[in-house]
Structure formats: C-alpha cells, structure tokens
Image (spheres, helix red, strand yellow):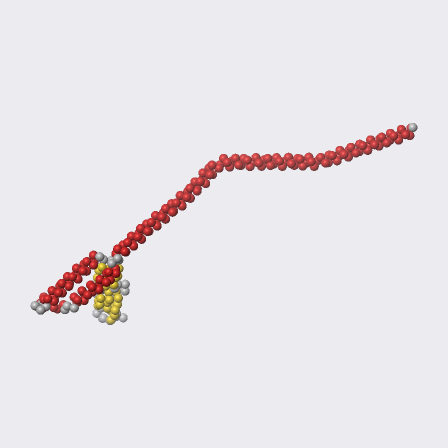
Length: 236
C-alpha cells in the first residue's frame, strides 16, 4: 500500500511538472507569435498615420490652390485676350496696308491706262505728222524770203504757210493729249531716246553729240513712243 501511494504521488508530481512546462512553452510561443502581430499592427498604424498626414497636406495644398485659382484663371484669361488683341491688330494693320497698296496700284494702272490708251493710235498718227514735216522741208528756204518773192512763187509761199499752220495746230492738239515731238539736234547722244543710224568724225563738233536728225522722235506722256533717228559724231 505504501509503495502504491508513493508511486501515485510521484506520478502526480511528474504530470504536474509536465503540465507546467507545457503551459510555459505555450505561453512563450504565444508571446512570440503575438510580437510580430503587434509590430505589424504598430507599423500599419504608423503608415496609416503618415498617409493621413499626406492626405491632410494634399488637402491643404488643394485648398490653397482653390483659393488662388480665380486669380490664376483671370491672369490666364487676360494673357489669352492680349494675344488675341495682338493677333487682330496685326491682321488689321496688314489688311490696311494691303488695301492701300491695292489703291495705289489701281490708281497707277488707271493712270497708265488713261495715259497710254491712245498709244496705238498715236503710233499710226506720227506718220502723218512726219509727212507734214517732209512736205515742208521740200520747199527751198530761199524762195520763202521776202526779197525773193515773185508772182510765180506766191502760190508756193501760201501753200507752205498753210501746211505750216496745219502742222502747228496738229502738234498743239496732240500735245494736249500727251503726244510731243522732239528734235535732239546738238544734244548729247542718249541711247534711251535716240537711235544712231550712222556715225562720222567731225573735228569742229564734240564727240558723241547729235549733228543730224534724220527722223524726229515722239514721246507719249513722257514715255518714248518712237526714238529719234540721228547721226552721231565719233572723233575717237
């Protein structure tokens, strides 16, 4: 009986020790298992706090931006309007310049059309004027002198005077319409107005001067309609 009681007591003590050891092991395991959770929870709470701070800062910045947005919008709108005004002003000035250029060009074209509308008619008319000049040049100047006048030459003098008066009236009428005749005899040769038909040396005259007019020239409103055909001095 005694042995049985001692063995039962020892068994009970062993089982109690085992249970205590197991409880300690479980408590330690639970403490280790709970530690990462606490850390992770602590980290999660800290990250949540940072996120909340960031969100708060973003909200503050957004609020500030919203507070400044009307001025920025007005400034941007003003810059846009200024750019539009500059563009419209540039277009207006270009349009005005183009219109003025068009007016000037139109006026020049109208003036040229008015001044040179009779150019073809004038070219055909100068031949008739030349015929008057040729007819008058065929009369000897000696017979026109008063001391040489006789009954036989009076008719010739009257014809010459009539032709001369007709030529003068014709040239005066043509001059009113811009057509003028010019004789370059004695002038310096100008290739823009004269046409040299021949050249010859002459010691008593200057070089490159006109000494003979073979055919007189004509101008229409300052523009050469027909160059004068001349003889030019060439002493070199």
